[in-house]
Structures are given as structure tokens and as C-alpha cells.
Image 1 (spheres, rainbow, N blue to C red):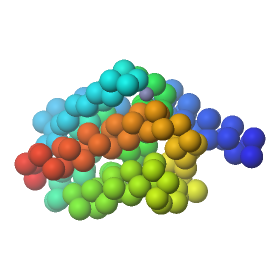
Image 2: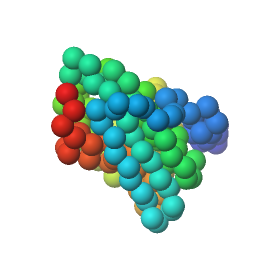
Image 3: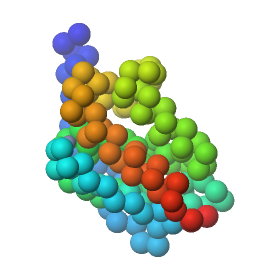
Image 4: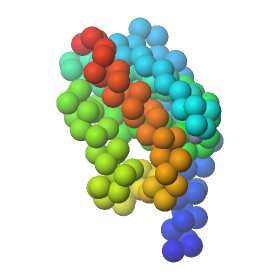
Length: 142
Ligand code: ZN
């Protein structure tokens, strides 16, 4: 199990050091900022929709490695998804983080499964996803 844990740590560190889709998105249809006061994490998520699908998803933020890596993974996960599909991805991820759903073993997200043993860190992992979900619920972008 040691090697799997090391692999997961490497995946998380890779997303922190080389975040995917990081940066502000001008003219975003969806923009949502969220804080995690427990840890001091901060994230803003952005998305542009085209033909009802996420054409571009980005994030900005600062905070612990789990919050930033999870945001980076989320932008990859939600790219190309419709609003309904994105909502389902977010719900599924939240279910994974409370142990109600299996993690996809072959994907980067699996690296976050160790976090579920640390309840205080779960908020870090779901921060960006919750922000995106709030944007989907409240935003009126097309
Ligand atoms: Zn955190």
C-alpha cells in the first residue's frame, strides 16, 4: 500500500506544481468565489459555455495542496460536460468524499481518496466543486 500512497501523493503534488487550467477567465458565463475558513483555502471558478457545454473551465485560488489539486482536477473533469452532466459529476465527487461512492481508480481523482479519512480536510477537497455547483445553480449563463 505504501507505493500506492506515494503515487497518490505524487499526483496531488503534480497538480499543485503544474495546475491545469489555472487563471482568470474573462467574460466567463460562470464565476463563483468560495472560501474555506477552516483551512484558509480560497478558490474562484470560471466557466464559458458553448452549445450548452463547458467549453472552458478554469480556477484561481490559494490554499492547501488538497484544495488546489482538487480544483485543478475538477477543471479537467468538467470540460466538455453539459450543465446536467457537470452537476452529476459534482454530486458524484461529493458522494466519493463521504464514502458513498467508489473513486475511479484509473483517474487522478483517485489520489484524493485518502482524504476521506481526515474529515477536517474534506472541505478542502470539495471547495472548488461546491463553488462550481453554486455557480450552476445561481448563474444564468447559457
Ligand atoms: Zn485546505
